[in-house]
Length: 441
View (cartoon, rainbow, N blue to C red):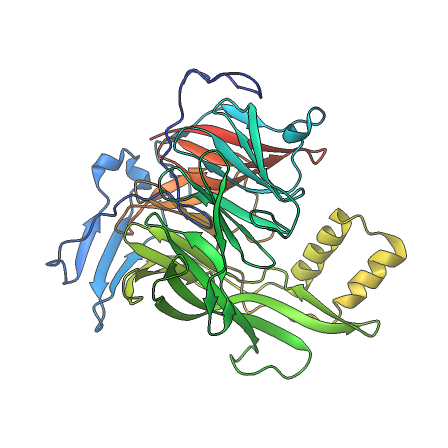
């Protein structure tokens, strides 16, 4: 394959990156999902279409059924371990924004999200300064919006950035959940909070039609009942889909969220996430909305107009519970990365003395969708697994497994477009860069 020249900040690109976008937290691009014919109600065995251009070894077979409520259930085999789709990611990023030294806009700090805008510009949510930094298609800084503060269009804890309808940009605050809409030039159009009977909704995804998926949560015990003091807890998240701040919501019910643990250390309550704890994922998938925990390899998708469960996609997956030794090793690694040693390290370890084990590892780590309505699910790696790069199972728009794709090692993927990946990399010195990688299908 011809090598793509790397374009650093300040250099023009010779080819415009396609601006189709993936859909996950903060994503706004929309494409129309293909609907399955109504006549396919009986059990059927469907081979993956040959048009997907994959090796025979990567093809899987899916069994489709409908339950008594009419929910489509797609059961997939696990693709062969050595199978790979014939899709190619460039050997190096075509755009890289971020430097170890230089002008402030290029010194990224807590770049927790980014979005490729319709005109090719790249908007970066730089959480360390609570700024939206906008770069041209070659990575040259154009403008900075927002900033630290509590006024309209300012942020105290910038959470995400994405496309809004037309050529506008949406971003929101993590602490107050205030949503801000900017026009293409960075002028603030409006700010609002999505209120519900349970309080302000935490924005989780912006859909292509401008609706916002939000949630409110409460902690519950391992049995799902009320909490009684210290110990294990897991959030229970209730979702609504809202058209900005005006329309009546679509309800999606309550779902199990992140696992955590509350203890007393030195007379003070300490709340922390459990090692290998399970969580909850959301994405727009064609005309459906994914809201699904990662307890099992099962993706649950709902009708966006009614909130009714419409599709369940499953894939073969072997799982088990972590051992105490694996949990202790993971904690030691995390505490070492935090720079703790000696007595401080011993005290931190003591703080986790009563931490319970999770029932089993997460079945997967992450999920994204792309503009062609493919579903990408990142594989979880059990301790001791030697995997050189992140591995994703890709499903077609109907939920049939196509095969595996590897993404660049060290790249936290924010979005997947029709012909690109957009994400963040951090080097051995801790220097962050937002990168675009070419994708050929």
